[in-house]
Every structure is written in structure tokens, then in C-alpha cells.
Length: 243
Ligand SMILES: Cc1cc2nc3c(=O)[nH]c(=O)nc-3n(C[C@H](O)[C@H](O)[C@H](O)COP(=O)(O)OP(=O)(O)OC[C@H]3O[C@@H](n4cnc5c(N)ncnc54)[C@H](O)[C@@H]3O)c2cc1C
Image (tube, rainbow, N blue to C red):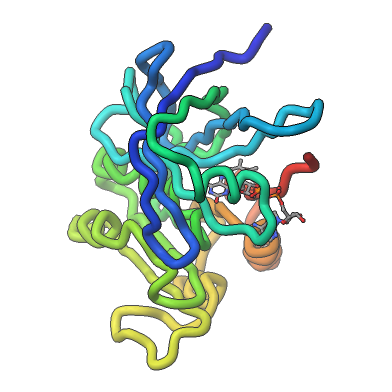
């Protein structure tokens, strides 16, 4: 069966950190799109050559309902010499592109355990931003959002995460590996350190990992040492495409 395809039009293209652009699209045909927060879409980009240039991006929308939405927001990190990077960073408003999706299993199930860790580095926090409005549906679960970056200037969507963390059961941890001096409300080092300090426990916790494949593998190995199994760790690796 052919994958559902949607035509979208670029309505915003904003540099939000030295290395990240936020892009917003409106749905043109069909005009509505339904997804589950945590999923991603695949862009079919204009290219030279015979293989389609397909690149995946997490849905970063922040809205009350993911049903019949009319817009799509993504965040794209700069990759040196990257084909999609070159395309998106220079894309002009009004261009139309085809996307397919939604795809992926990195979403919140109906039932959640006592604690959930949402761990992301760089643009890997996009799916967690998308989940923020859902978290209030789980008053008995404690959420820890861990955002890892090198420097404070590399972080984005901070107001959204901080606003969510005003709720008693939501905690937002910023982990900066190279910032010196360190802002008072941040942890020094990698997300791994902060996660370790929170003493993850396979009896009570579920962990989500998203972003850089090395980070996802490192944290997964750390969790395996603590007796976490594959069902207690949901992973989305931002692996590079072959073409
Ligand atoms: C499920 C999924 C969701 C994703 N979601 C996002 C998202 O929300 N935001 C986002 O920015 N990216 C996301 N990605 C990554 C994205 O799909 C592209 O791989 C990325 O934008 C680079 O594409 P490019 O065409 O610019 O680089 P390419 O032309 O594919 O690569 C250029 C060169 O850089 C290398 N390279 C590629 N990516 C990296 C990297 N990250 N670090 C170092 N070297 C690299 C390649 O090996 C190659 O040598 C996701 C990937 C997957 C699989």
C-alpha cells in the first residue's frame, strides 16, 4: 500500500540557536494531519540524481490536540555538508514539499509507571515538547525531562519546558557539558550523569531516549547495567541516511 503523502507549504523558517532552525509548515493537500505526540515524519526533498532524498524529523508541535492539525513544526540541527541541512537552512517561505508519515513508536502509552524519564540531546527533545500537553493526563506519574547540550546557547523551547515544570509532577533538568561558568539551574556534564543521580530503577521507571545515536547507545548500556530490559527503554535514534 502506498504511504500516505501530504503536501506542505513552508510558512516560517527561523534560526533559534547558532545551529538549529525551526521550520513551520501548513498542510496544503490534504489540509489536515493526525499524529501521536512523539512520532516523526519523513520529508521527500528535491534532489539531483535518481534516488529520492528522504529525511526524517520529529514532530515538535505544541498543541492541545494532535487530531486534524493544520500545521507541522520541526527543528533541524546543522550538519556540515548535509544535503537536507543545506536545503532547510536556505528554504524560502512559500515552497511546497511532500512528506509521509506519521511514523514511530516513541509515544506515551495509556498506562505509565511511577516515574518516566524523557531524555534527549539537541533536537532530540522535539518529541518531548510535542508530548507536553499530554503529561497532565498522568497525575500519578513523575516526569523528568533531561535536555542535554554543550552550551546554554544551544538550547531552545526552554519556556515551554519550564512552563510545564510548574506542574508538581514534572521536573526539567538542563545538562550542559561545556558551559563555564554553569548557570545555577543547570547540571554540569552529560545527560548520563543527571540520569545516574536520579537513580533509575527498572521496578518503577520507564526511560525514553531520543537523538544522537551515540548518546542513545551510551545511556541504554548504562541502563542495562542497572537491569533495565528493552521494554523499559524506548529509543529513537537520529541515524543518518545512506543517500
Ligand atoms: C526517526 C528520525 C528522526 C529524526 N529527527 C530529527 C529531528 O527532529 N531534527 C534533526 O535535526 N534531525 C533529525 N533526524 C536526522 C535527520 O533525518 C538527518 O539525518 C539530518 O538532518 C542530517 O541530514 P543531512 O541531509 O543534512 O545530512 P547528510 O547529507 O545525510 O549527511 C552529510 C554528512 O554528515 C554525516 N552526518 C549526518 N548527520 C550527522 C549528525 N547528526 N552528526 C554528525 N554527522 C552527521 C553523514 O554521515 C554524512 O557524512 C532524524 C532522524 C531519524 C532517523
